Length: 71
Ligand SMILES: [Zn+2]
Image (cartoon, rainbow, N blue to C red; front, side):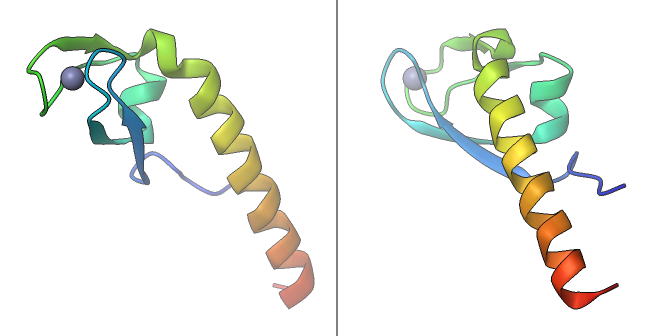
């Protein structure tokens, strides 16, 4: 199984649009991050669907790659 916990993802702050870098683990654990743009707290709960979609897409791509490379 591919571990994506330490993969960095970026998402725009809902308030100011500043892109904040987080790791998947934070999204998975529904962490609260402080926006580096406007210093407001962002509850990652709202971003969960996007993260899940991204995670699925990455997993699928990796599986395709593994098939291609016959690992
Ligand atoms: Zn912000």
